[in-house]
Length: 291
Ligand code: ATR
Image 1 (cartoon, rainbow, N blue to C red):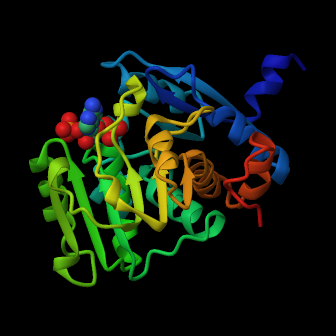
Image 2 (image 1 turned 180 degrees about the vertical axis):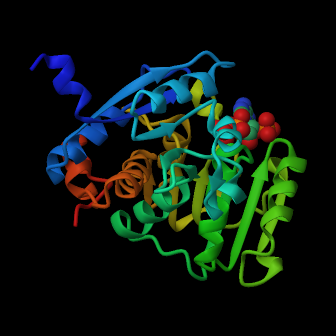
Image 3 (image 1 turned 60 degrees about the vertical axis):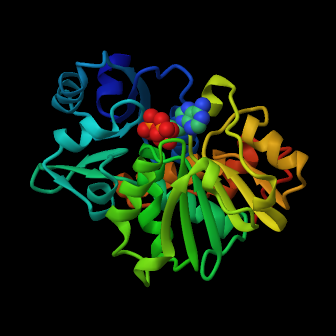
């Protein structure tokens, strides 16, 4: 049998984005496949910004089994699929596509679940009755608010450069918390000067090496500062948080692993070991105790 024939029998998965070169998803999913003994291929797919549905249609027509979706296509993916899971519908974003038994395309969003698993399992950060600040009100924030509210924080404040965008997200999700008054919104310069238990940085400023100016008073002795971005070096937000001695300062690599694990579970019905994967990719990480 030729290698291409051989290849065509292996279940095909991919991540689609633009740019996509930097993506760690193939490494992660191939490690999960090794761990679990699942036989699959996983590749990166670059699509022109106006060619999302064409590339995705071709991928599935050629036998593709499942797709991860990243920037800038998470909204396009919502339009593409036949049905959305509850989280994906409320987030307005899809990061995982699969086909159900009747051949319909289903769009899921595993980002919020990924964040919560990383916080609770790896970092031992609980949300219930805690004060949480989210900095930023873009797509990343939209994807994490609902699962966070289900954990019943005492307060969830969304602060954004453009306050109206934070207000719109707070309004959209106000029914999901235990009471409507615990989700609030403000401009960056209106953040109350008081400690939060958890500060989630969800702006894209760090991608350009910029830091968002925040009051130092938000860091107390037990504050966890979490950047949803990930990088081999400390992000500008992490550098800032460390300089003010936040108790825990981490990037979003754990979230990336956990959202991938959830997608893997959706596709293959088997849960990979993310603690082992964390150790494999970041053997020196002290910030993330392995269980
Ligand atoms: P994503 O999907 O990654 O969240 P996005 O939807 O473009 O990306 O949102 C980017 C977020 O980063 C927004 O909250 C944006 O603030 P505005 O809504 O005011 O644009 C925030 N952001 C980007 N650059 C920033 C900067 N230099 N300072 C403060 N906030 C910034």
